[in-house]
Image (cartoon, rainbow, N blue to C red; front, side, top):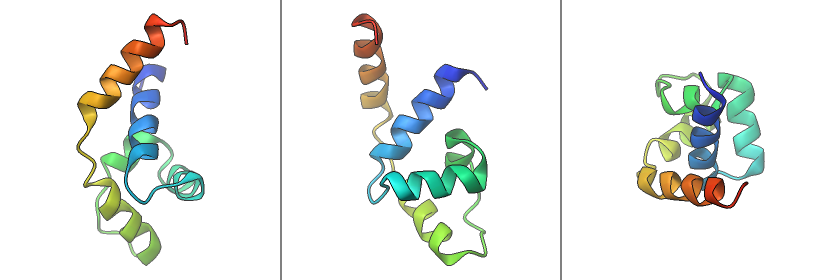
Length: 77
C-alpha cells in the first residue's frame, strides 16, 4: 500500500462519525492500517471494536477527502 493511500484512509477514518483519536489508535493497532479498517469484516468478537467498525462502514464522504488532499498538495502540505 502506498503512503498516499494510507493518508487517504487515515483522513477518512478520522472524519468518520464517532471516531476520535483514541478510537483511531485502537483501530489502527488492531487492524494494522487505516485501509485495513475500512476493508475489515464486521465479524469481530470484541464488541467495542465491532461498534466502531459499524460507524466506520457508514462513512461516505470520499469525494471530500480527495478534495482535501488536492488542496493540501496544491499548498505544499
